[in-house]
Every structure is written in structure tokens, then in C-alpha cells.
Length: 222
Image (cartoon, rainbow, N blue to C red; front, side, top):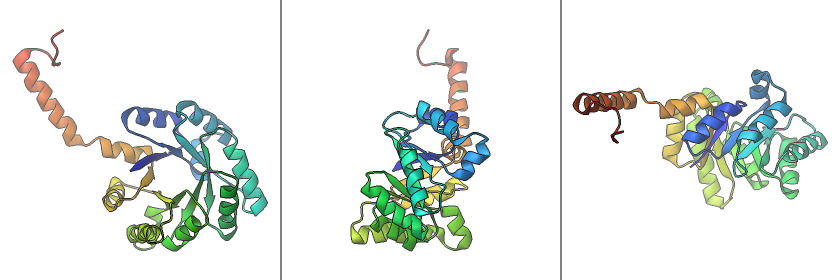
């Protein structure tokens, strides 16, 4: 499984990359505007903390074909590990084909159905981002992702699912059990998967018992 972080917070990506195996970060126009930072600042800060082998995905804003392509080229020109997100509108699907023809790494986004995602995969999209929580609000989002995974397998398409739009770790858990190849999750959801309160309670019990017996809180005697 490949883990991306869905955020504009470079410091959060840095901290989680030190703790977990993180493949990079994704963001979108809403996340950037909520950060209070200009997109150029977000890109600069993120690229400063990401390794060359970690990818950073930014999304086009234009809605016409030429504008989408201009945005995509501008994003991918920022660094070798920059990738572009393109929504799966009709003109976006056309742009996905064109962007792939130019050698860009493309994540098809704003996906609300398995069919939309499958058509983006046929157009060459490298990653497919179904909006899991939003799809769950409209129906069975988890099943739609399962359907998509089966479609990709049936037809041997190389596109990878990069499930997005999570509100809790249970949704992530369900997709991991399903074998989804990658997810992009907010830092708070990632930390909730790491910081189980019972784990810390167990560690506290071990440390207390050790200290009471040996008068120190480490294995090695200093």
C-alpha cells in the first residue's frame, strides 16, 4: 500500500514522513485556500521537505482544455517530482489524455463513480482518486471503490486507485482490507491510526514496572 498525505501543511508531512513510510503529498484548491497561503508558497514549502522520490500533486484550476493544459505544464515544471491532478469532467478527460502524451504523471480527481474513474484509467491516468466519504454520503462509496478495483483487474489497466476524501480511519481500514493500492489521507486521520490510546497505556505500564524494579526507565544502564 502506498500512503500519501492530503494537506498543504509541509511541517505535518515532514513529521509524518519521519514516523511513517510516506510516498508524498496531495493537495487541492480548497485545502490551499484554507491554509491561508499562496499556492506558490505551498509548493515551495512542500518541495523543501519532500525527498526527490516523494511526489507532490497539485490541481489545475482552469476549466477549458487549453487552460487545463497550461496549468498542468506550470505545475509539472516546478520540480521533477511534481504531478498534476485533473478533475474527470469531459474536458478534463480530454486533458488527461493530452497530459499523458506529454509525459506528465496524472492523478484523475473529483471522482464520484467507478465508471468515471475507469474511463480516466482508459485515458492513461496514473492514479484515480475516488472521493470515498462524499461517495458514502450519496450511496455505497466503499462498494464503488471495490467495483473500480475489479474493473481495473478485469481489463488489465495499470492505473492505481488513490482513494481520497476520508473522515475517519475506519474508512481507510475498509479499503486496506480490500487491497486498494494507495490512499491519500489528512494528517489527523494518519495520526489517529498511529496513536491508539491503549498502546500508550501499555507502554506506561511496562515503564512503571521496570522503574520500580530496576530504578531506571531504560534497558541500557547509563
